[in-house]
Image (cartoon, rainbow, N blue to C red; front, side, top):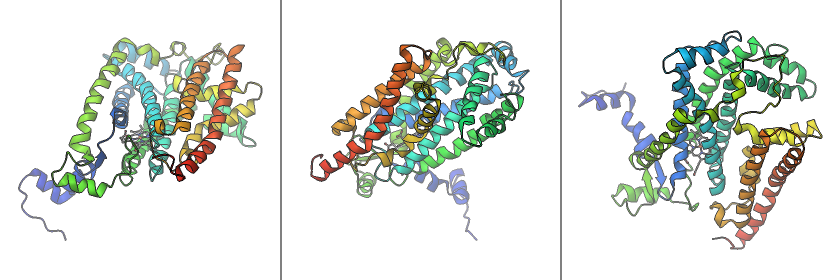
Length: 413
Ligand code: HEM
């Protein structure tokens, strides 16, 4: 049986029962971060803040939302937006944060790609990150359905229809997912459950796993330097903080992050109060009508790049579907596709740098054309951009293999 002494304060009392001092050491004061990083490394913590905003605003919306196809539209557009005091504010916070969370996730991912932060023991950080991306995509898709507007219904129909193309089980699978032959009340209630309970729960667990997976390989740094953490920690603890190449997560790293968060919050609340329309589709302000297909159906901006890969192969639906499926999961394989052991920023890896900028340009083109109607020249541009995406995936192992050979011959320092 553990021995309990008379505590000399509340913290000591807690420490004897819950080891809170060890916990703060492990999670905060002895969680080591390299000094050599820039503000882009604050994106992870910004994502935590955005997720918190989504949960808090979601809880307020949940108090008035009604998951029933006859009531859902009015509960959002009438009750929450017009009748509940500050209901509009919580809805705008929720919608704007949902859009921004994807912007920051994409930045966070691209930063990791630029600096090669998915290599040298960081594979699990990358994989748990990608799982978070997939979970957030499912969370956004299920949330989009809840107001039961025109886009909610038709986007749900188009996306669930995709499963019908799976050989043998496809058509039955679609009915199973929807709980009906078309998106209906059973579809709304099950997606409601996923959106407000199961997916947020799994996301929270996955965020903890993502953080935990950083613990052993540590956060990367701007030069990809392989730091000797034991030596640097010793210097830090011996008072040679200026000389040491690392800082503690708290108070050093987080205090800088808090500054980035404050600046970011100015942007968030500017958008929430004055420019919220970008996060809400005007077509979704019409109630769902199963007999009136909108002239042009498209997803939210953050799904447009992969949606355009699906549409790009306008001459063959099955090809489009195959490459759409590949696009959803291909980034999981980054640690495998990049054959080079070099952990360095892309500006020190010339061929990779070119690859990286073509990837960004291609994602932007796919996103822009994903929103335009699939007609005339748009079809051709979408097709070429989809092909470029596939070529990029195929050439990555080749150029990184060349880089590896060059590196092994002492080329890159
Ligand atoms: C809501 C979701 C996410 C949260 C809350 C989150 C949080 C964090 C935090 C706090 C860090 C450490 C500091 C930093 O580098 O920013 C981090 C690092 C990292 N995250 Fe995420 N992340 C999320 C999504 C993702 C996604 C989608 C990916 C990519 C697939 C990803 C990949 C990484 C990688 C590779 C690192 C290590 C960066 C480095 O070593 O320099 N994360 N994440």
